[in-house]
Structures are given as structure tokens and as C-alpha cells.
Picture 1 (cartoon, rainbow, N blue to C red):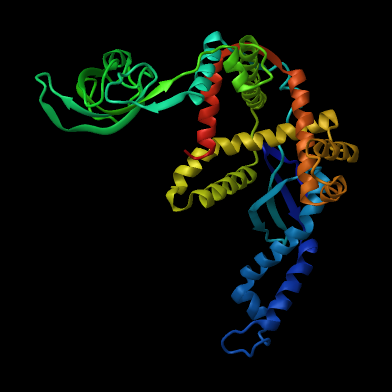
Picture 2 (spheres, helix red, strand yellow):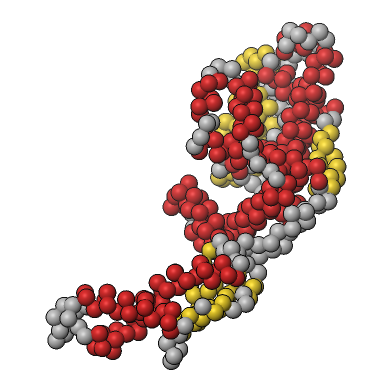
Length: 443
């Protein structure tokens, strides 16, 4: 066997291999004999077709079948000789039987990309620092006030005031006051002062009584209306059908004790609110920073990926999505959407593996035992011995080992990248978390 020098192009390696007549002829003869015993041709009894006739009729087909078997037998030795460790094999190219009976072909192999295990170091990554403002604290306190408000049905002589909940019918009118057919909204409920119809409209609706109608001008860009008919700035007759008086509690020591009896003063209460908002928002910001860390590490690399492995990764992702989405998904559009995601996931796989090798990262038996014991500490209702049995072997143990390894990898990355602090607002983090939740829920 003559193995030529491999030719590499990214993750694709081509190796030319030549086999002499002496190496392949026994297999060809064996294949012809096996085929002859079961062959049936017109004019001959089954199994009695002469070899010479068989070679004339289906010789090419038999030789190709023999070549497949020969390649399967000889290729491992050829790869060992060329010191190639493929992760996938593609169909051979340039298969050729020479006149002297020898066989030559080109083996097409896919190999893992070469990944520099330290190239990610010093990659710039944003670390989000949350600034919880006084306004954020007051806004949350207002929410707690509403949750603890005293709500009563308004009487005929009561007048609307800030924070009351109004139920109104609305009719758009033209400049002369004539109703515009079709542009009507019934039983719309909103809080006066929330800016639902716009700040200017809120002021106009103060002091109304039930069955009273007032005209307001609504600028849809400055209101919170989503589905109200009309375009741009429009005039509306607002008829008050009913409303609830909302009496918000004062923010004082009594209110603080009502929220939690452990609060000794309103200052303790406000400090607790700030601490809670800070802890929540910083946790969410850390989650975003962690995602940014992964993206920055992946972005530090530019290497080819094995085509067949990328195709399988994409196919598996598309299949899972199709199962979740059913007939509502367009397969082609879905694959286009998932292609860059699959590329990122497979890149991360190889980067992660290179870091594991470089840092000698693994999940030891001691690591797993410690994680199981820590889990028991936070879930004391679960029996420790049963937990140990649960994670002794099998899929759950493998999943836990993967989590441990990933935690160690992320720790290495956190200590090696170049962090760049960026201050963000509480509302920015909150809106991002809400959007992420809506996306994950399929909303």
C-alpha cells in the first residue's frame, strides 16, 4: 500500500492511496465467487453462471463492490500511517482501477479544527454594573402602595382624582365634534395619572363625575394606548361610566411595618427595597455578562468547522424546533435562522474542549460528591443516601459532571478575559429580563 502525503484544506484532508494488484485481487476473486453462487442470468441455472460470463456481464459492478470492502479494510491502516485522526469520513474520490490491476483512490476526511487554547485570553468583555436610582426605589414603593391601597366604589357625587381606576367609553370625533364611525372604544379601564391617554389628558379628566363626558386630545406617540383606533393626534369624547376610588397609604413607619413587621422605620424599609432591587438587577446583569463572556470568547476565534458535524448540529436543532413548533414552522426559514446559532454552538464545543485539555479540567468523584452534599444542604427534605444513589451512575451523573466542568471552564474564562465595567440602569436590566422571559416563553 502506498499512502501519499495528506493535503489539508481547513477541516478537510485528502489522502491519496494506491493498492497493488496483489493486495486487491484476492478480495475481487472472493466477491466474484460469492456473487457467482447466487447469480441468475438468462440461459444459465442459478449458481451455474461461468465466472468468465459473470465478469463480462457485471464485472464492473462486482469490482466496485470489492473496492468498497477493500477500502474499509485498508483505510484504518492508511490513516494510522499518515497519523490522521478523523472525526468523519466522506465518500472517496477518484476511484480508479488501472490496467495493471492496481487500485487508487482519494480518501476524504474531516478532522477537528486546530484551536489555540489561549487565544481567548484578554478578550474584552463588558461587565454590567447596575445603578439603582432613587426614582427606581420610589417606583417600586409606589407599586407596593398600590398593592396595599384601599379601593372603594365611587358614589354619584365623588370626583376623580389621581390613582383612581376609571372605566370609560371613548368615541373619536372630528374637529366639529361629529363622531367618526368605527373609531370607538368601550369599557376601557385605566389608572388616572398613569399616562395611559397622555399626561395632558390625565389633567383634563381630574374632577369628573360618573356619566360626565369630557373631550381630550390624544397624541398616540405620547400615550400608552396600543390598539385604540385613530392616527397621530386625534380628538376623543371620554364618557365616565364608573370609577373606583383608590386611597394609597402614606409611606411612613406604619406602612413599613405593614409590609414587614421587622422594619423598625421607613428608612429601614427603603434600604431593604434598594437592596432587593440591587440584588435582583445585579443577578440579571451578571447573567447578561456571562452570556457576553461566552460570545466574546467565541468571537476571538476564526476557524473552519467540519461540514458534516455542522450539518448534523444544524439538523438536530431544526428537528427539535420543528417538534416544538409543529406545522407552523417553515423548514427553510427555520434552518436559515438556526444556521449562525449552530455555527456558534459547534465553535463553542471545540473551544471548550481545548480549554479543558489545556487546563486539565475534569469532574472528579470528589467534585460530584461535594455537589450532591451541597444540593442536600439546600434541599434537606431529600434523603442524602437516595441522592448519592441517584447520581452514582448513568445520565444524571453525566449531566452533573457536565455542569461541574462548565463551571470550572467559566471560572477560568472569568479570570482570564479583560473585563470592562459598564454602568447600566435598573430599568435597562429589568426590560431586558422581561424581553428574555417573553422570548423563552414563546410570547
